[in-house]
Length: 208
Image (cartoon, rainbow, N blue to C red; front, side, top):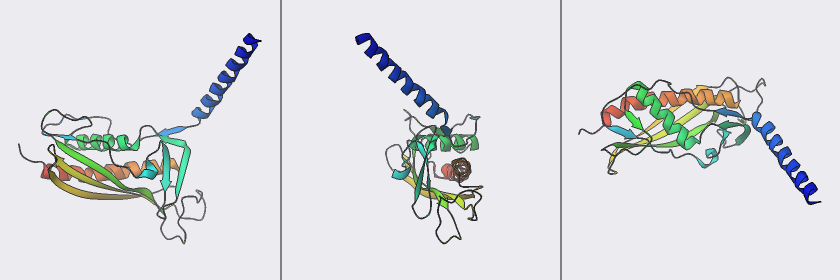
């Protein structure tokens, strides 16, 4: 009887694992597009810690938020890393590639600057519709709309002294309201914001 009970328990555990594996195969993971090559840079390092993310986006799922504040959580579409970590890493890679800063996601031991990022908006705006909604299916009569992104950047010295604050915004049209199109559009928005940030950082870097 004991052996039979053990076999039944083992069968139940194995069947659960098989179901989990089948479900996990259907999950698509997304990440922001960023330059693959990292060019060497010089100058004072810029520490980019984890970003401040709106509470609705602090989850592994891709969350689509429209301009009415409605949210759609995509269970089958997830970020490959938490947004508060993925965003500063992506911005840092763009800044390095653009030659605007020597960024790092680890606190430097030497004198450095600190770039604090706060995501104000990362959502869908469906213009010219009586009731904008992310729930309109692709191919319907509703217009695809656009993906908007707004980022507040606060630059400080390593001792906490404020160097400057800047708010950057970008918007891209959506091919359709799917997670893949949303991530593609937001990748372009992050790249555009990073390009503007790269122009700003050298001007505000304190002299040694």
